[in-house]
Length: 449
Ligand code: 5AD
Ligand code: SF4
Image (tube, protein in one colour):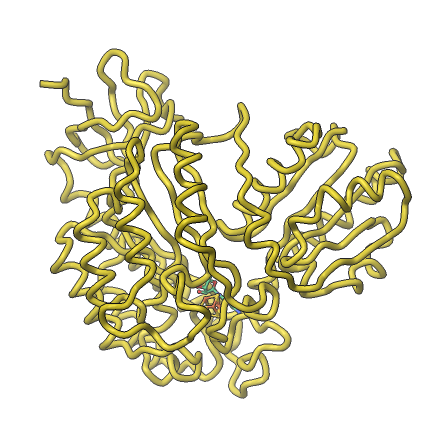
């Protein structure tokens, strides 16, 4: 049986899809790259903004054609939108066979087996902790873009309830794996050739805190303990993580980042807003000042660290003054990458029913202003790197030039470079940077002394 999996949304969804591909491959299914070749079509969906749901619904509608041509095709919706809409999806999409929520993903192989024995439409959307340990399977094939880099989900769900966010409702309560469990998975990945591991969680730095929403006391950071342990894995070159909530960066965690040489010098640190009034309305438990203090503390410990962020523009009640506070902090931090989102009301969240919803045209305008600022900052920061030597983890052939390889610096810049003889994907090499070309760097590998 051939299976096609389409993934929408964040890295956690990509990781879930990979785990599901792995579970199915182990049962003898073949994972295919195109929907026309598949007997089973799976859609792993996102709900974080309305646009993400619309995209998946549109695609699903289109699948009725395939079902007409080949009625035996099995079609399933999984993940966040499945959890959000539940069995309602079965009535609104008549050619849909099943709905599998975020807490039930590990049951996919059983569901498919049952459906092949007996066709009946079903919806499984209960939350269950088994999903935490049931999703440790990995999968790579010839289409895997970078087999040297892997994701490990260390927490699932979120307890923070930011007032705009649907995640706590669709991914349920925050649960953490144990350090031993994560280490086992990490070692297996490294044994299979992985050089870089990205640790994932909706609030990844809350790892091991048992769902307590109070940021940890000084001296307490199970996430830092995990970084120290992972740093010792022989053969592993790099550790990244996303997304941490700024308040969880106590000195212990900052020290761990500085002391563990495998931890990359790039942090995705969601800001959301630079206005204290809006941060409060968002139920974000920090101020613009305390956010910036953490940035400074991290810069002091790790001077070449780069930051990326998420910002929401047009949150209900956001005035010009509030937006200006965001713009000014955004410039002060000097992010080298960022995602600017136009606020999208999500049913069931507190912000969706707040007064003073902002017109789309204003959201658009503020979005453009921050995007232009980001471009300016990125150009400025990238041009500082000409002439420096950067360590690059090689990912594969450069798209633009077949004689070049491509990879990333620890600070997350993409570098296309002319390699020395014998250099191959998975190697860690020294590259002299010649010049920036847009948002990537161009360089040449330095010969080993
Ligand atoms: N509207 C717009 N952006 C949102 N995000 C989360 N919820 C919403 C929403 N309702 C953004 C946040 C978060 C990122 C993953 O998505 O910036 O960090
Ligand atoms: Fe959503 Fe806030 Fe949790 Fe992030 S921390 S997933 S924005 S509720």
